[in-house]
Length: 247
Image (cartoon, rainbow, N blue to C red; front, top):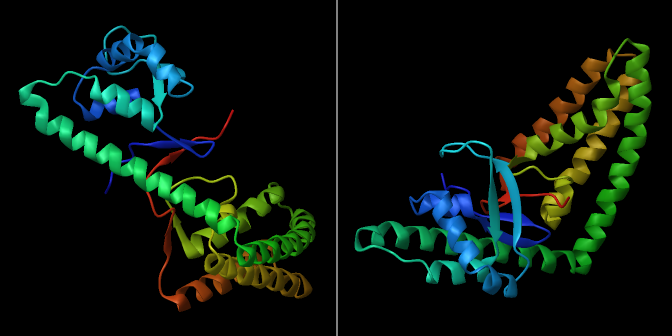
């Protein structure tokens, strides 16, 4: 399995200095000091983001400052890093891996922007939003139904149904606030149908006065049957990275 080396935040790709240190087989302090030597130059290439995290694995305890470098900052730093002859293979391998992930991640971001500008995509996304709204209206009724049967955590069913649908069709490599925002037109079409299936199963189940847990299982069974008929689950996203939500 390919190791996650880059992160994405606000549609920008970064590599953290602790990841860089690990891949180069050096102490983080060495990379940290190098960043500070060239701090002025690095700041000319973009905002120099950092985070203080618990210091583990190195002497000293307490916390350490981790810098997040964008592609230009990473290239500048790596070209100004001294390398011993015995380290050439390790450093070259690390450079290539990180460079590949920068390119792959930037291409993925570009493909997302291009997709969302497409009129056909906008139409499909609109249908998805409408279908989800209709489904959540039905789930709202289901939640009250579940509470009347003694459920103490019925309000979680908005999330539970969403996770069930997503896991039926996709293997998620990352946690997304809204998975539907990254889906293609074809992928959205599956979720639109799943929303309809869930809505219908809930309506039928409540009409038949089934136990609320059995209604969920009925909806899940039908969604999984649809997924199985397609023969495979898609992996999302198609590249390896770590997504960081803006604070």
